[in-house]
Image (cartoon, rainbow, N blue to C red; front, side, top):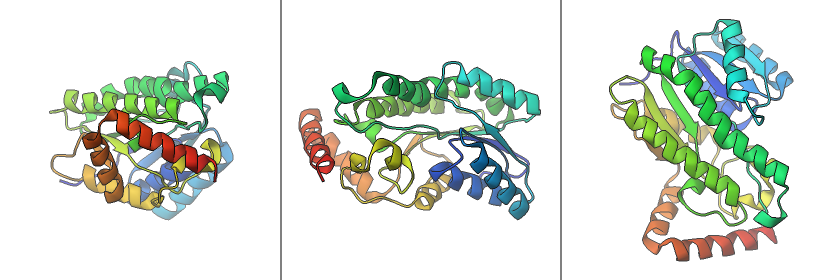
Length: 266
């Protein structure tokens, strides 16, 4: 049965660009009120005004840097101050670092782990009880196909997405019977600003999907009677991950390392 987003309030992190913007536009069109969270407040305000005017929903921007300790508690407090009853949650904020591990800045790696893992976990914990109690919404944690395999030159990013994948699939099981639909979304290379931050070679030279294609697949999966615990978007990505499982970890890591090294030299 399709999810009814009308009269729901969906909190979306990383809502100022890429998948976050596409999620916001799609859910506003389906009637959901929104809480939009990202660092860039000017972008959030423009998006909130656009969606409110187009769809008659309430869109509340909250400018906040989530890559800092205690961001989960700070966001929970900010939402409470606005009196917003969050019924669905999309943890989309995250970034990657494309370089050999020994060349990456220590503080950047700490921020990456904080945002991709710690803050995601804290935010999920802050809101999952009301989400379960409401029982008609969704919880989406954005992982990556990088979470299914080692990631030479993206070592920390791939490791954080492996955490997101396993964490979310566990919550999928724990949430059975509550009505809350839980899913880890695992896209491959996608046309977003991710590569402006991580580096253009971070896609390994693979073909990128459009953000709207990823969101189409995610929402379609969540509308199923029994949504999957995780979703790899794109047939080519599913084939690649399946082939890696058959090949074994040594061969897969070697092949990925070679591909990423060649991409970095282009």
